[in-house]
Length: 379
Image 1: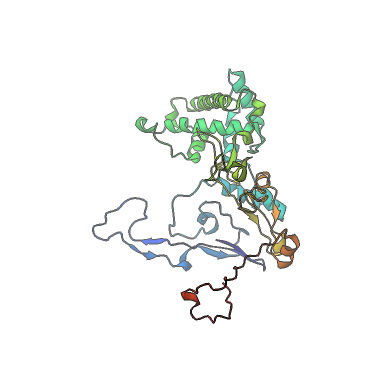
Image 2 (image 1 turned 60 degrees about the horizontal axis):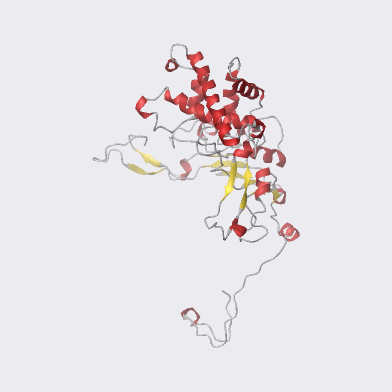
């Protein structure tokens, strides 16, 4: 948990059940016959990472391992599998600028679509040429790109499908042949490492083989995009392929007028601060990501803002059922009314729920047995 208060304090507190393991770290199976590896309960809460007003001036948590950065002296192993660190590294890159941040800056950071993997991989195309005019045009486009996965970017689409094709090609060189068709647990960090420093698995001329692989993946990506999005490359905008869909489980032809929410074009991917998932062979739609985002001002709670989707109300048929979806896609935050005065100021309507009076002569139930007949009890 990250923490901030009205006095300007900020902190981090880990709160979880972390087992105390004797003689092993939990990564592999161990014999259970003699109790040698039994757990010895759980770490006390006070022994988990915690800090108030740390020297870094901030805490950044994006499904990454926070211990190395914020608790470098903490030596108890807590876990081994975390998301790749690109989102966290981009957050850190922004927050370590020498400036004072405001609400607008935090809105921009939550919606940040700069791709750190693209910033490492795309420059490897420098000096690579292709005999295919289409492929060469794509290389030239990528080399002029700013690495931002904007929903209106054609280069972002080319890059995403290129990575989709490049990853299995790179892994195939480093896997036993019999596992290549069934292995799909890819780690982009490995792909980046192989591409930046091609090893002998690439063959006698690793750099040339690496370059050929990059071009081959790009050829596959362009061919796939032509089939999916047509021949007009100007229409290959990332948001045209990358959409968030809100499909109600009760959506049918009969309920469509009540439950349909229009798809929302999205930027970003699984490795940007605003995580919106990456394409698969089946489609490029967003399949995970944050539906709610908030920027909270502890100095003035009424100055806080948020995003949510798809609507401000879950009641089908309400004008507010899907009224936030477009704002969510655009990154246009709405104010979060906190104080009673602010809530009263912005309230559009008021709904009061209260029990109906009991009809005359109604038989009382067991819960009413001690209630005088002439008294009313709120429920």
